[in-house]
Structures are given as C-alpha cells and as structure tokens.
Length: 373
Image (cartoon, rainbow, N blue to C red; front, side, top):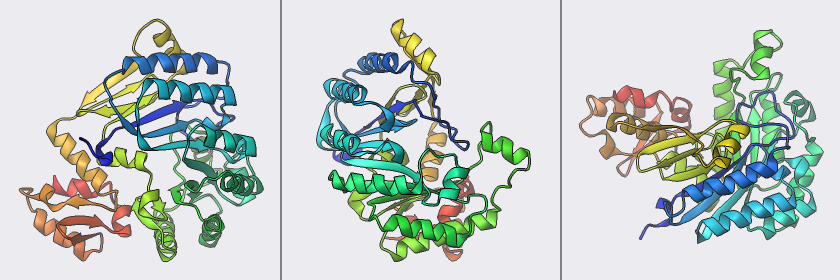
C-alpha cells in the first residue's frame, strides 16, 4: 500500500485569462469563446487515462486563471473529475485565484466544491507596482479577497508575491511581505521577476524602458526574504516557497520536486510516471481538435537516461529543505571534497546522513549538481 507521499497528483490547466500580464510566459488565452469545448475535450482526455492512475491525493487547478470560471463550468469540471478519478479521503484540493474574482459567492463556491487550499495571485500590495505589472486588481481588492476567503472558512490560503520589480527598494518589498503576514497566510510563494523571451517585458527591456535587476541586488532581496520570514516562523521548504507549518507545505507541488508521478490534463499540461514525461499541445484549438477527432493531444514524450535521471534528482533535491541522501553521492569522483567545500562555503549542511541546502545554497541550486559530474 502506498503512503500519501508516494501517491500521484492531478493537475488541470485552465488556459483562460481575463488579460495577459506582461511578464507571464505560461500558456493562456484571453478569449473565452472555446471554454465549453475545452471542458468537453478535458473530459475526453480524462477517459484516456482511465485505470492508469488508481488514486490521487492532490488536485491542483492552475492556469491561466481558474477563478474566472463561472459556477456552472467549475461545478461541471469538478463533477467530471470526481466521477472519472479516485481521491484519498484527505486529498489536498487547490485552486488558483486572482483577487478580482474572489467575492463572497465565489469563495463559497470554492468551499462547496471541496477545495481546501487557495493560492491567491496577489503579487504586490502596492498599487504602483500592480499597475506596472498590469494586474487587474488593486491592493484594496487583494485585501478584500483575503478577508473574504477567511470568512468563507479557508485557513489554508497561499499568497503569491513578486519582488525585484523596477523601482522597488528592499524596504518596499519588506513592507509588502509585512502586509501579507497580517493576513496570517499558511503559505507564501515569493518569486523574483523573471524577464522571459517573447513577453512584453522582454520587449520593453530591449527598448530600454527598464533594466532588469542586477544579480547582486536579486541575491540581497532573496536572502532578506529568507531571513525576514524565518524570523517570523516560516519554513523555507523550497527555493521560492515558505510554509507556516509542515502541514501547509503544498503537497501537490512537492510531487514535482520529489519526482512523484503526476498527471496533467489540458493544453500545455505536463505529466510524469514510470520514468517518462509527456506533454500536451500548447493550443486550445489544437487540443480540442485532437480530442474531438478521437486522437490523443500528447505532443511529445521523453524518457530520461539513468544519468539524466540522476542529475535531475540532484537538481531537484538541492532546491528543497529536505535536501539529498548522502548515499546519492557515494562513488561520485571527488564528492567528499566537493561537499566539504560546500559546507565551508555555507551553501549546504550535513545532518543525519543528508545534504541540506542553506538559503545561500538555494541561490545557486541550479549549478550545484554540475559540480558532481
């Protein structure tokens, strides 16, 4: 019998957004004309996996902006998922939301449909910064949405925030963190603004409208964040993620970092099981067309070699508080010498047979695995 840490998770990609943020490189569309067909296609895709995954202990509905789905659409989506798939009795059900969508009726709908975890995309409590990010909500709306979720009975609420914005000082950022903590969130995700190719912000950077954060400035903000939240009792359990206590760590996202199987449904969704990854087409129209014609929407697959899987395990382990079992470094050339140097540099600690990254280690987590190859 599998314990819950080994059970797979189910991810649903809702590709619809009320508007496209200039920094976002996730797949989404701003028209809702195909929403009904998308929902029908999603049910057909779910049928393709009937019997392959016996029991899930997490459901994560992301996007896009899942919170903009109307009552009928969201209810139909959940009814279909619960009919097609089995979930453990203590399953974590997460939905992402934007503050401008979260009104009392919508919060009550989330609760009635069985969601027990909400991830709210606040990004900032500063109206100037929200305008820069072209968010559709104000700081006041974000505060009202958080109050609304509390009144609806949600105690597992996560807040997404963004730092490293043009013109933002460290004191500005810490003020935003402090405002977030006034709502006693169970979880915080703190992301440095990344300028991705092809986004409006990338074009603005190329035009000289603003300059990206200097590397040292980003490091300082990251370490200031880690210290600020540690001083207030939050667990820094993954590079960008903090939890008020162990039980409020995002169970679903931890599956990605632990290489636990997960199934992703919807356009652009990724899946992983039995050492293989696969992903669906990155187009609502093509996704619908495939499934309405009885074809799989899977666009590509890959199976990692043992060496690639080993490197990935190191890369993911260095991103998490749990770190890595020292046994993974046995028989690797110069591993003891490298680990000793990393400890002396304050990048990792060795405790009870495990290699644990420090906040400074998190800063260079992507490069650490390469030292052992």
